[in-house]
Image (cartoon, rainbow, N blue to C red; front, side):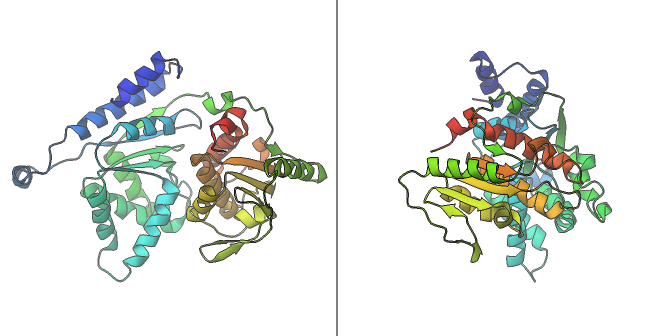
Amino acid sequence: MTPLARYQAQLAAHQLKPNAAQAKAVQYLDDLYHALETAPEATWWQRIKEVLHPYTAPKGVYLWGSVGVGKTYLMDLFFDTLTIPKKRQHFHEFLVWMQHALRTLQGQPNPLTQLAKQVAQETQVLCFDELYVTDIGDAMLLGPFFAALYAEHVVIVATSNIAPDDLYKDGLQREQFLPAIQAIKAHSQVVHLETVHDYRQDHDPTGNRYFYPLGPEADHHLAQCFSYLTQNQAVNDLPLILFERPISVKKRTDSILWLSFEAACGVPRASPDYLVLAERFQVIIISQVPQFAPQDDRRVTTFMNLIDVLYDHRIQLIVSAAVPLQELYPHGRLTPAFARTRSRLTEMQAETYGKSCQL
């Protein structure tokens, strides 16, 4: 079934509400699907023809818009229907993988080109969820790496809250990142989902899982949640070891983890750390989340990465925080990217989200 056919089937089954912006985006994805699925196989005759008429890969799709408008849903609709070699990752996880892979190629000529060739051998399509850039090191690498990927005919489909021209806005040495923007625009259909309604806000927020302000009452609520969830389970407070680094916990069982924000995000951690937690625990309680200041870029980024991993893996999350969710990070350079985190935290409080988790 094609992306368009599946989308129309879900509309007919009343699983979705009609949405003109989504319908337009699906058409772009459907066109790309047909271009990829009908591309000629690399037979010996095709290779000979490519010498005379080099193959040009179809343009990918860059879906951008405000949070909760269905960007990830649409990309997953496209990804799930593809039958050719493909790979889907949260963009931050991809950056972590890229940095690690480059370390293994240290000292070798043209490591980014080598890495792009490796990717191209494994997949024809890369799907990136939540493309945003905050780190200068990543910004410096992405221009030549995207160019190398496109040279290998890798097609990229991405979602973002941010228009291509606004990526890494006001970042250090941003002029070094401009080639990445130019490459994205040259090799992508840029599609803006102009929908103001956040569908994640439609979930019924019964069964509160976000407690504020900090203090004895919030602590009592978390203790009640932990006690209820861990009935007849062995409880301990032994530290966890993540990639040879200890992380202190308040309490834990085999499936329930309670730790402080400082333990979870107070020191630099990356998505692989949180992937270990998501694979091991079904419910995670995080206490004492502060209100972030404008200069808290590192802690905000770490917290966003944590929420993305837990959301993607449908982990139950219970939080105590200093302020209401809407006031958690009111001002700062990462405010546009944090809008998605806030929206996901809202959905993660909902009873419907809890029922979809594996408990």
